[in-house]
Length: 87
Image 1 (cartoon, rainbow, N blue to C red):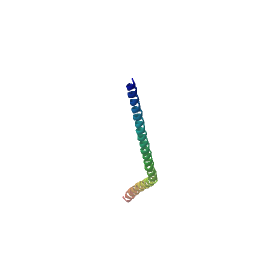
Image 2 (cartoon, rainbow, N blue to C red):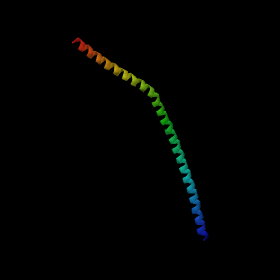
Image 3 (spheres, rainbow, N blue to C red):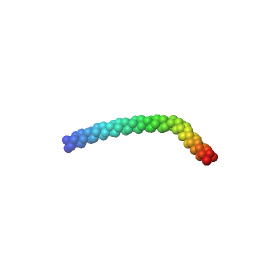
Image 4 (cartoon, rainbow, N blue to C red):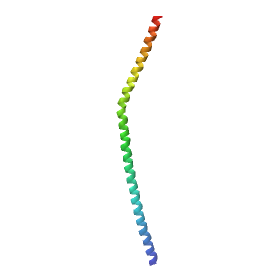
């Protein structure tokens, strides 16, 4: 029975060591995951920040485009009126 007790204690010690090793590995992996997740969040915030910076420029170009389209419509209408009045 002493041999069985020693064997059981040896297995228990092995189990405890293995469990501690696995817990440490899992903890390390979660820390790496958290670090990578934080890095990804920072990069996404940077991308959104750059997008917000271009929002103003995009709005300005959109207004310019609308203005030019209105001018084009006015020019076409003026040309049509001048053609009608000259005939």
